[in-house]
Amino acid sequence: MDFSGKVALVTGGGNGIGRAACVGFARHGAKVVAVDRDGAAAEATAGIVRQNGGEALAVTADVTKSAEVKAYVKAALDKYGRIDCFFNNAGIEGKVAPVAEYDEAMFDAVIGVNVKGVFLGLRHVLPEMIRQGGGTVVNTASVAGLVGTPGMPAYVASKHAVIGLTKTAAGEVARQGIRINAVCPGPVDTRMIHALEQQLSPDDPAAVGKRYQAALPTGRYSTVEEIANMVLFLCSDLASNTTGGQFVVDGGRTSTGGAVTSLATR
Ligand SMILES: NC(=O)c1ccc[n+]([C@@H]2O[C@H](COP(=O)([O-])OP(=O)(O)OC[C@H]3O[C@@H](n4cnc5c(N)ncnc54)[C@H](O)[C@@H]3O)[C@@H](O)[C@H]2O)c1
View 1 (cartoon, rainbow, N blue to C red):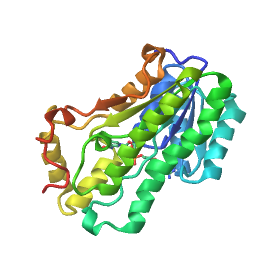
View 2: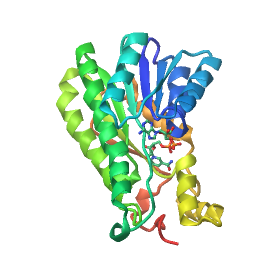
View 3: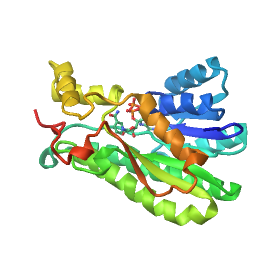
């Protein structure tokens, strides 16, 4: 995989999977734009990339705000002149609660980041890629975009929507040299999964983590690098005729077809 001379823009680049993708893109030669609503976290990611000898720009932006999405696209173009790879990744987990009790404002918040944020990213990056004559996009869905998870209605709905957006947009721009795929991580060792463990068992989150990992075929959460590797592959020329697809990295979770313990099952 060679991204020399290419520019990779990553939302949610300040932490977790996004940060690992920034570091991975830079290691393979790309200039990186780390976008996050947490500006200090985005700066920290850019700092890590620079320490490793790469080039990076940090941009503070909330992906749910159209003006801020336009601004992160402009910042990338002003600094590096193009966007070759777009990892449309920022997301939030929301609260664990059944549909019958789910808070309406929380539902809007999850859909706002995970669906509207992904839409706005596509809305404002794709015109630039069309102008350039090509590019690659990976949207972060989840195994929650493929199967239900009792207790996470907003998150599951949002990630199913990301897959729908991915398929639709991919078909629209394929003839213009733009490929769009979705990555579907299972549980990954980041703040997000530990926050969910905490919600499920405030007194003993580690026990939830242990049980959940034991129920996975591989027996452990994915690392952020294992997700980033799939993202890099999909953005690379090795995947040159791959578009509109969903790529699972989940330690075998979905392969067991529901035999795995649900996150919300105590
Ligand atoms: N960790 C998992 O188990 C897991 C599993 C499947 C999918 N995912 C998805 O992976 C993506 C990354 O999650 P992560 O695990 O790295 O979580 P994380 O919380 O470590 O990182 C998410 C980053 O996104 C940023 N962010 C959140 N809302 C934003 C907004 N409105 N605008 C700009 N930035 C915003 C946060 O500040 C944070 O830096 C998310 O879309 C998540 O749904 C995670």
